[in-house]
Length: 429
Image (tube, rainbow, N blue to C red; front, side, top):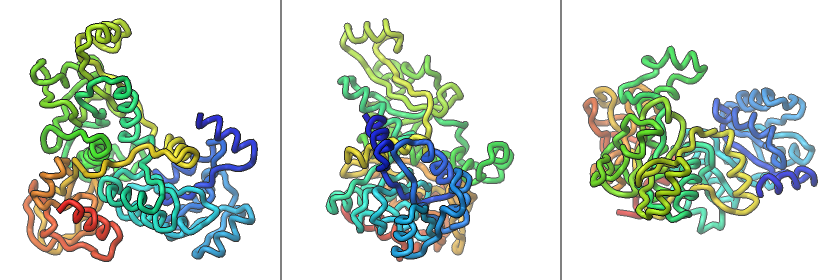
């Protein structure tokens, strides 16, 4: 068991030495979580804002005299050898530190995640992404490059895709026919949401309004379900999915196949539900035709009739991530990886009329939001993957509600994430 292995390492004074990129809200939370995990130690933290990285360590109880800021491999290794912890401004440095056993990217930036993962692959370092945005954008090429290099690439536990993968493995391993895999959305869907419209709720939650708006406008949900789709092969029933209102008591019948009175058009669909009673959880709806198994599940109060939903009512995001990092290092087993070919992708859609010269802002911003569809549909439209949208400059006008295409924007062709995405797309052209 992972816990027993970690306790042995703790007792032996041989912890798994972790490097991490990202010191924002999520990254600093990961730093706080790691201090409680036995047999693991976060020894290096990278962020372009080194002050934020220092603050994250200090908030976790690490004394300032135990921290060394380093910009090169030699000084960083000297500091680690002296028992210090390292702060650096370049995520690529993490991959070059021999003292680091494994690296985690704990951001929601496809650009930073791609940079971190590729550096790890190039330097033979295993990498776990607590960054589904990067995986959806360039995960297929990263996974392929990692396999060639003999490096482990994985998406972490904790976020909905990782939790859903764990639940799916549990249910599918019993041989049950999975009809729908999905999540409960934390708030009502409003594709027009901006930082201004969510400012009050963001302030109450002490969160970045861009982050909150990315939840409300659906972009985050699209990333989560696309990540899960590409790991399972499940596909959306329509562009943007359906997203019905549901409760644990009604979800099974809602997602029954159409022939049985539900809304599901085929087995193996990916979707989400709205409503407070399932918010934050993940679920798997199955159809059971074996009368004995159905009777037993009815007796065990899993549901009624021939459709049953297995529901995990929470996900712990970066707080759970150390478990998958430990699994990756101890057993060289990934938690979640994309299949060889994508089945789903996320297109960029204009939130307002966009004009040449407009610079697209970050997820949850004022300019665009993401909408999931089958990968083939996204390619057929030449739609710009939403993971590449932040920072792109419009070169052609696009009306509100219309899809932004590759031809509508100018991208930084020198960026790692753009280069990787072009390589990835070339594999299926």
